Length: 365
Image 1 (cartoon, rainbow, N blue to C red):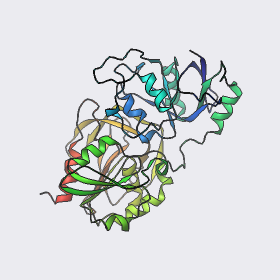
Image 2 (cartoon, rainbow, N blue to C red):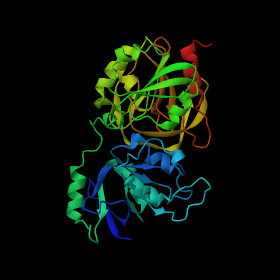
Image 3 (tube, one colour):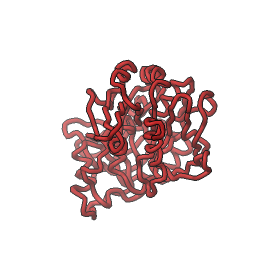
Image 4 (cartoon, helix red, strand yellow):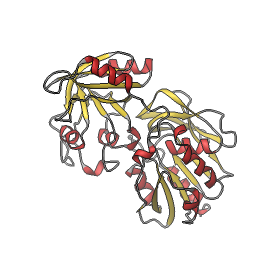
């Protein structure tokens, strides 16, 4: 394999080998904001999750690709990550569902990768210094880049602060999913297929672009409105929170991840950026109403500021760092959670939230 280097915006360097896809006609680095994910499985779902747009994912689990890849596990129509960092890639996947190796998947989806990296050292550095822009690429062979090129690319990468990435990943036109008895309009800020699968079992879902107006949504007379997950800075998606504010109190609303953050802003709240975000499948969250603990899957760099939404009550809290993980406004018939209840990080602790949305739409019937 070809020698490669990863250079962070603060000048820290990591050695590795080039893998995945690289443009054969041009020597250019992969750039983005580096975050780490602690999940042991689900690498395909992570790489195809639109919430990772603009980012380079470092997997903390050392061996990626063990069970191969199947199209049935894609969370969207394509991969949105800017690049992937791993300690080691499996070349011999073992699973009856597998249709290709992780290497073949990276090539098909045109995802640049760097492997052989000391991912433990990189993760520790991000935990101490925070998520930051970076660049990586081959430094040998016909596509070899100079270290100065990588350093300049890392310094010039914008990251995700103040960037509206939801508009990049949203659907260009409305479409329908599911055949459930209720009617739901789902805002696509980067919606995952596994979320649509859960919603589609209880409702016929019309997925609409992120810029759809509240008037257009209400003209469809839905039983409820869903606000999806998505990438980037919620403060940069002001057009969406403005429209959400016009929906609150008129129709039941349920938000997940970015949708939860945008709803909070629509209710007068604010958000802030976490040092290195929550990315993984083992985050403990306390459900305050019952004092039970849910093991959750999470993927976000921003969070709702505590006590910034006086008109709502906090319903869930992260036990690792006390981040607000959920809030509700019974008066407005609206609630949201920061984590991903559709995911299956081992247990299915949080799937009851979809039932609560159904009950909210039917008045408990």
